[in-house]
Length: 116
Length: 112
Image (cartoon, rainbow over all chains, first blue to last red; front, side, top):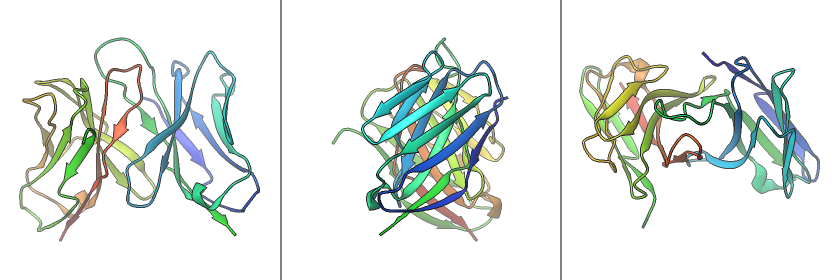
């Protein structure tokens, strides 16, 4: 099955700096790569996703890049703010088709701390 | 309010006891999922369901039982709790494989 590795496990940045979290996946058939943000005491929430036919996607201060050849994708957060402090999870799955659900395989998470 | 809820939010139980975690969603999503979250392991899929009365195993199903008699509910039962099942459990739902999963607030379970 799919295996997703995520690095680093913890990341501390100064407010205003950029943060980058990297993930690699093993199944070349995976074609959907979401990123979730989990704030303390809450469930994960989707913040951005990318499909395999796109190399980069941006949403304000957040961007995700995908390298299908190398089988890795990254989350970039620019101009970090204290409210960006959270745990971030990457995930991968094969979207589409019927049956079996959207069985996301998650990375192990990155604790991001934005320091004042 | 519309959304996905879990109950209880916190539970302490003893080894060997049966415990059921509840999940309820108001969107009529077809798909529902149960994950456990443990430090160093991220989110691991326990069971999922594609519709009422259709369930299937995920990555770590041993020791757990699920049912789905109604679309909106997806309870998770630990038939004989063990200390290794101490974890935070998340329920999630989605319309179908092409859409995002929406997560509940989680249940923190401690097995003593």
